[in-house]
Image (cartoon, rainbow over all chains, first blue to last red; front, side):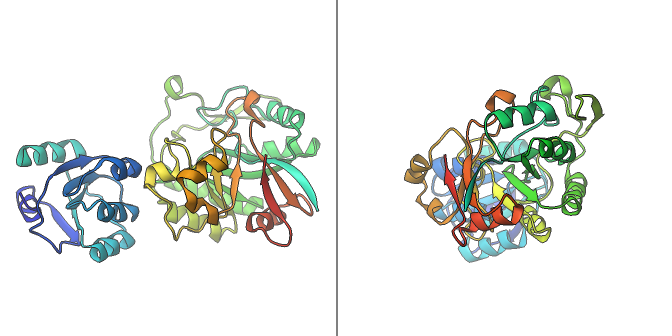
Amino acid sequence: MQVKDIIEKLNLEVFGGNTEPEKEITGGYVSDLLSDVMGYSSEGNVWITLQTHKNVLAIASLKELAAVILVKGLKPSEETLEHANEEGIALLGTHKSTFEITGELYKLIS
Amino acid sequence: MQRFRADLHTHTVLSPCGSLEMSPIKIIERAKAKGIQLLGITDHNSTLMCRVMDEVAVEQNIKVLTGAEVTTSEEVHCLAFFDNWDALDKFQKYLEENLPDIKNDPARFGHQVTVNRNEEITGEVEKWLITGITQSIEDVEREVHALNGLFIPAHIDRMVNGLIAQLGFIPPDLHVDAMELSKHITLEDFKKEHPEIEKYTVIQDSDAHYPDNIGDSGFWLHAEELTFEELRLALKGENGRKIELL
C-alpha cells in the first residue's frame, strides 16, 4: 500500500507535500499528543491527528512518516503547509472523525 | 537592587479546579504569611477575579500581577500578564470571543464563580473555562504582545497541558518572555533532558489551587522596584535585574 493508494481509496484531500506518492505505508499511528508521536510512531506510518500546529510536520519528518491526515475538515495553517512542502511529507485531510478514518485505514492496510 | 519574593501562578475560586476556599481574603492572607510580594492571578481563560484580587492585595502591600492561564487550541497552557486594566479588559474580550460554547457542569468539573472581598458570590461563568480556545499558541502570543503583555508557557515539564508534551518540542521561533517549570521538578533535572532550555529565562511557580499550596514554589525577583516594567527587565536579565529560583 502506497500513499497514492490511500489518497484515492479514502478520498483524501491533498494539502501539500505529496512529493513521494509511491512511498510505502508500514502502518498507522493515532495521537494528538506530539511528544507521544515523537516517542512511539514508526517510519512509514500514516499519522492521524487533529493537531494542525507546524510542529506536526517537523515530527513527521524526523520520524520519517509517510503521511499526515488531518481529521474533521481541519485545515493546516499557512506555516504548517509550508513545512509540509519543504519536508516533502504528504499532508492530507478528511471531513471524517478520527474514529471513522482510522477504521477505514485499518481495514485498508491490514 | 532589591529582591522580591514572587509566585506568578495562582488560581482562585473562579477556576473550576480551584478550591472554593480560594477567595481573595484567604489567598492574600496565605500569600502574606508566605512572604510573597508579587502574586500572579491566573485563572483558566479568564481575568474576572483580577480586580478584586488587586484591591485586597494592595491593602496588604502585595502586588498582584493580573492575567490568566490560557489554554491554546493545541491545549498548551500559557500564562499571560498585563500591566493595565485597559489591556486586561481587551484580553478578557479576546478570551470570551474565542472560548467555545461548551457549558460547564459544576457537579463534574467544579464551580466557576466570582466572589467579592466579603466572599459573597457575585456571578457564575456558564461556559466551561478550562477547555482550549480556538486560537493557536502563536495567535495567543501575538495577541498578548500586541497588548504589551508578558507571555510565559506554563509548567512546560508537565505531561498534561505542558508545551513539550503537547507540541513535542519548543517551537524555536516562539516568542516567549520566560518559560515556567512546575514545582515538581528542578531546573537542573529538567536541563538534563532538555538542554535547549538554556537559552530561555526560567521561572518556577506554585500553580496553587488550594490555599495551602500558595508559596510552595516561586522565585526571587531582583529589581529596583516592584513594577511590571522591572519584572520585564528582570525576565530579560537587563541592567543587573534577574530571576533567581528558590
